[in-house]
Structures are given as structure tokens and as C-alpha cells.
Length: 191
Image (cartoon, rainbow, N blue to C red; front, top):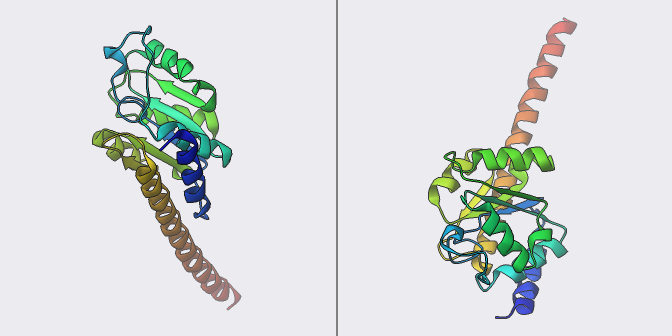
């Protein structure tokens, strides 16, 4: 499936969801492309997984911001590859640095830079430890075994919607309980 066909399918899929993330964050190695940056040379021409370009184009066209969170020790090579692939300008934040924190520092920086709450973010990564750590921050996080593709996008949008719906239900329960408690204490004050 070519980039345009993937983009059309992704646009159709995104259009089916009423609740969308404000920011989609991607890892790089084995998520957007099938290799580790540190094992490559800047002189090489990189390639991405087949669905990636169409998916990120569709997300941008739908007004969803994009960011990168990568623990690559070779940020210079990663940035060179993003330039060569003509996608560097599509990302509002690029946090590419080596870390032992399972990307929590990356997400703190992305949040500081964008102001977008963690619960309005969707994240794709190929390492389960990153998925676990970032999920605890409130980010909907999706494990990708063979890079980002249309199936992963569908799963991500579905889980994001489910998380938003659960969050809204909890908020409504809390508001109902709080308003009942405050009205009963108001009645006590009137006696």
C-alpha cells in the first residue's frame, strides 16, 4: 500500500473517532524505522516502515500535533535521518537523548514544551518497559512489535477513546458525589 493509500485509510480511520489525542508521540528505532540509529552512518539513506509516512501525514492533516521521544545515544544521526526523510518539520517536539528513565524525562520535557496534558497524549514504542512507565504518567501507550502501522493506529485511537471515556465517567461520579456532599452540608448549615 503506497503512502497516499495509507494516508487515505488513516484519514478515514481517524474520522471515525469523536475523541482524538492532541499529541501523538513516537519512538524512533524499531517504531518509525527498522533499525537502531547508533548502528548506522549519517551518510546512509534511511527508510521507514511502510505505513509511517501516510499515518503521520494523516495525523498532521487532522490537526493532531506530533512529537518524538527517543532514548537513542546518537541524536545527531537520528536528526540527520529525520531531515533526509523530510519529516523533521512535522514534529512540534523532538526529545532525543540517552536516558535510564524509560522515557519519563522525555515526556516531562514534551509536556513542558507543549503544555499538553499527559492524558491527551498517545504514544507508540517498541519497548514494553517504556510503555509501562509512560502509561503510569497517564499517557495512552501502545506497544508496536513491527513498527507503526494502520493496525497500531486503530488500536491506539480505540484505547485513547476508552481511556477518555473512563476518565469522563470518573469525573462525573466525583462531581455527583461532591455536589451531594456539599448540598447536604449546606442543609446542615441552614438548620
